[in-house]
Image: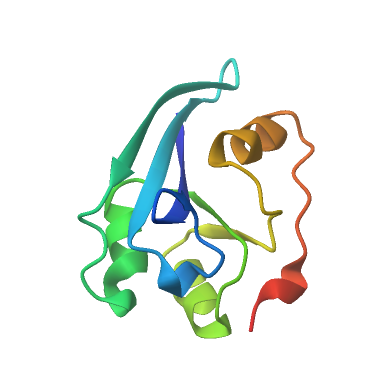
Length: 112
């Protein structure tokens, strides 16, 4: 099983990682590439500097984000979380579907 987190803001995928106030965390079965569950978590947003550590403690291995600062990208990497930056502006379920089908398109230039 793997966990993927998508930063959320006001019920939608956040355009900027640092502007998120929640994370939608998906549990995905590795054996059949199916979503087992998804949960909206608000307890992660304590302090921006602590987000990577808290995501790591939640077992998150991947983060999908539209835009993210280089500083946050490094903090995620330091916590062994792979970042997919520059994901398209889509519903979170569609991002996960594209990821599972090997069709997720990213643009790493979306780090600022």
